[in-house]
Structures are given as C-alpha cells and as structure tokens.
Amino acid sequence: MKILRILSLVIVTIFASCTSNSDVTPVDELEGLTKFKEITNATHTIELYKHMGGLEQGYNEIALKIKDKATNQYITNATVTWMPLMHMTMMTHSCPKSAVTKVSTAGSVYEGYIVFQMAQNATEYWDLKIDYTINGVTYSMTSVIDVPASAKRRVTSFTGSDNVKYVVAYADPHHPKVGLNDMVAGVWKMQDMMNFPVVDGFKLKIDPRMPSMGNHGSPNNVDLTQTAAGDLYNGKLSLTMTGFWRINLKLLNASNQVLKGEAIVEGDPLSVSSIYFEIEF
Image (cartoon, rainbow, N blue to C red; front, side, top):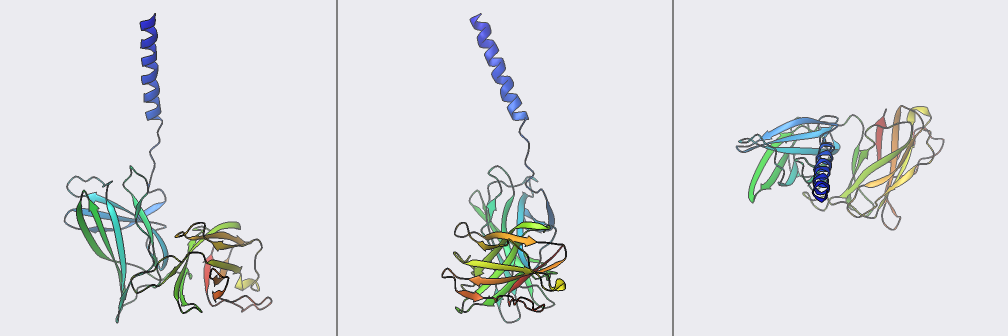
C-alpha cells in the first residue's frame, strides 16, 4: 500500500507539472504593432515596428527585433543602443530618445522611444544608427528613415524664459475618446546638439479647447506631472465631444514659474497659447 501511495503521488505530480506547462499562454510581444522597415548588414537583419504604422514627426514608440541571417533565429540576449541624427544643410543634431530595453526577459523584442522634433524635407533627412552587442561581439547598422510631418501638432520646441531650449511632445492617448482620457506627454531640454535629457520635477498645465465651437473648454482636466524622475508626464484629458481639439499648454518649473505658454482668455474664440498640441477624433 505504501508503494502504491508513493506511485500515485508521483503520477499526480507529473500530471500537475504537465498541466501547468500546457496552460501557459504565449505572449505576443508585437501585438498592435506593424513592421515599417528592415535594416541589414552582413550578419543580421533588424526589423523595426511601431503602433499605427510608420514614423512621424513627434513622439514615436519603436520596437525592434534582430534576426541572425545564418540561423534565421531572433536574438534574445543583445544589448542595444541607438542614435537618430537629423542631417541639415548647415548642421547635424539628434533629438530626445530613451534607452532601448527588452520587453520581456525571455523574448526577442526590444523597445524605446524617439521624439523627432522636426520633419524631413527635400534636402534634410533623418537617419538611425543602431549599435548592438551579442555575446561580446559588437555590431552596427545605419539607415535613412522616413519622418514625415505629422498631420496635427504633436511636438513643440521652444526657448523658455530661463533661456533653456525645451522639447515637449504628446504621447497618449493614441485613440482619444469622449470622456476622461489618461494623457501622457514628455518634457526634455537640449543639453547640446546631441543630448536631450528628460526634465524632472516640472508641471505641464493643459487647457483643451474646441476652436470651432467658440473655443469652449472641458471640465475635470488634471495637469501633467511625473511619478518618478526620468519618466514621462501623466495627467487626465477631458474631451466632451468628438472633433478637433487644441490642447493649450503652459510649462512650469519646479518653483511653479511659467517658462512658456499663456492662459486662454475666456470668451475670446481666437485665444490660444504659444505652445499647444492638436488632436482630432
């Protein structure tokens, strides 16, 4: 009887283990993303993905995968960095960007964001350099990328009253709805032509208005602040109806001093802040 009990316990344990493994649902790390470009060198192909298609002027969440050409397998143990560069007639500069991190420990998708503060034109263009290390070996790829102008204003660059150059960009919601939306934006400063660190401890005040409806506003908006240093800024955006909205902005420093932006004059249908975003849905 003792032997039978031990045998039964072994069978139950094996069955439970098998059941547990079979119940694990694979995670689709690319859900909702579309591949918009491939870059290749002699050893690898890098696939670039983004929500809602290709890049555009403004804030872009970008995912990538690295495929080994010899094995046709995706790399899961790379360390990745990137450097976007705008090639202008008289100068070259970069833009705000995040570190590149893995979506999951066991997966093969790496992600981050890049904020293109200006669009390409007939003579000026962006390229993207991606450096990565696999098992101690370093590789690199560089390719021209398409960054067309956004249909609505999603990013603004300006010099604040403190003589610092800032970049402020709209990040979310991707799909606005009538009601109270979670809103995300970013604030960066230009340290030099190649470095645009996140600004910590500021506040981005919002005042959404509908210019076509007498410039009326909306209730219950929550100004954008950080939850931790290095993060984007979060708040609440109230939209009372569908249509075109201008989100008027004021940027305040840690001492609540306004660095840029103006209050809207009530009753004036043409009143607008000098910095703002645009959305339409």
